Image (cartoon, rainbow, N blue to C red):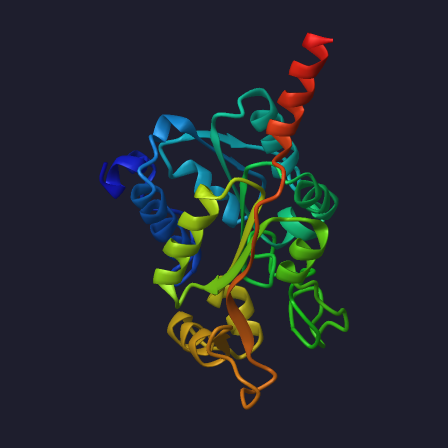
Length: 266
């Protein structure tokens, strides 16, 4: 199937702001699905609320557009009832690690075969540009005009310490990495987390003097380094990209099914 076969063309043009990175994520996510040779009828996309969550309206999969922060909870129900389906969960800052933080921790811990895509633009774009748990210290937002004093979560470290079995990070500048990491995440048998740093020129870029979308993409190029290329001489402030964890662990639905079969034999 071609990439266009995976989209609902009648819902275009999309509602994202000019320069938003989420369209780049959509494009390369569909390329990952195409390269994985998945039947679109075997895919369920579950999203919550926010700019990132509108992505579910543009894909021609089975989709659930659910409650703020509850995408992983709904996805868990889908996967438990139909474990043969491929479940994708695109989330923003709030869905993943603010109101949805508790669900994120336990989804990692269970290691259910699903793919969580954290579209990290470091701000709440849809509701007016408030700071988020991923913003970082000193970030200016509508709710922190002098700059936030909150330390940020690191989605990669949090996912690894909570039990996810595949964890990666990249940016919307590094489009080939998006496709490759998402493809590996989808095919991985376990809970996968892929953080994608995505520009928001409308709110984050304007308030923090990061400039337009092109300037923000350039910043992703200059301020990140692939972890395989980082050495002791690298700038300690550079953000690492790459696959941080990939290991085979017992998958939750398989373990549950084995338990049920054992009870039937007893």
